[in-house]
Length: 238
Image (tube, rainbow, N blue to C red; front, side, top):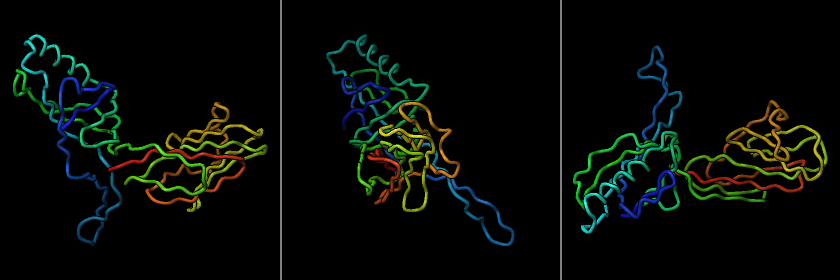
């Protein structure tokens, strides 16, 4: 066991933590009843928020007075309130973090003395964990993890009328405008946002463009209208 970090606070000075992790993700299927056939046709699915249960063990020690233990507990109460969601790092999951996590359930302390413990339920509204950040200046790259991720592409434009990045499946993002040599073009695929020299250029994105994600595995990307490029992404894990 070790401790956790949540909402910018390291809990290790006060508690150790034990993760009670679910065995896997439970999907929410979308289905349609079809006349003349048994059951239903599976149309797709949603990946619902993930609930992670964590047991905290108070490490106050017998040397602390009841008043000091009460002060510690109230400090923890304040740290655990993040109405807008916060980033969560858990024991047993080195290098991974969950975002948009909120405490949605909490048990009573089973003791108010030095060996007290309680259980918390963190609901992660983004249910896929974030791992290592990666980047590549090559045309081929390999994405790790077990879930698709969104790239951020930075391109140094040539003088011309467009820049473009495409993948091997025929998907692409094309930005059409007059570029000066050296203009820095930033494409954020998750936000579907484009800037040129820090200024919003979303209106210059061609209508047929697709801000695509990258599945785990090897990818070959092609770039045009630029003298250099960098692709950055964060590995994601179920």
